[in-house]
Length: 229
Image (cartoon, rainbow, N blue to C red; front, side, top):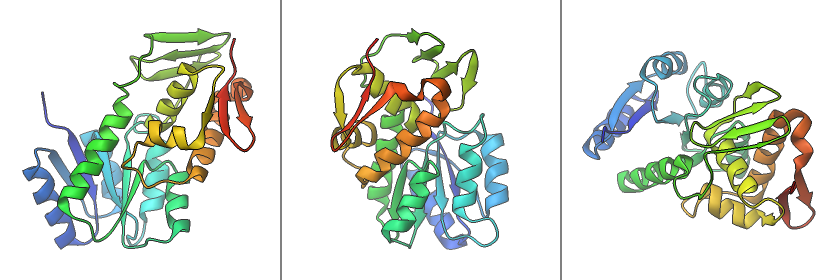
């Protein structure tokens, strides 16, 4: 099996080189960029399995890089882990609302970073979910093997986390999924998330489902339910 490809986007040279050294030692295939524009260009050329993205960079900051990655169809499914010295809740929420898959506050140990990377890769892989090859109802079709959905014949660019969330909801059609259960299932126990994170991703997912948005029903005070046929 080939090594997972990781793109590090970090403006601080010493930190960038240290990350590259530790991740290479852990068995990953690593590429590194020193700023946002070169990071986006390298994401297109290198097509990493995951991006480690520093939040505080001059010029184009990490939030804008994340926004562009998640807004580009060819890159939108690549998971992003934000790296930053800022630990306030509002900074985490903004990053997560833009589609970041995890958020690690500096300083952190190489072991912690590797564990979090593996957790995100395992989570977005979706191998733990027992799902059919495809699912279809009216104009909504989900191809679980290809990780693609189409809405009335048009492909909707879901991020890896949005696709996992939709998969979990469809797999439990008609059953209420609490926010805590969704956090555990979609983001797993390594993710330091909040229930608001679930709400944000559900809102983004509904927007992409278009006329079928109301198939994801809100159960007030509890969580969400995918409408049964």
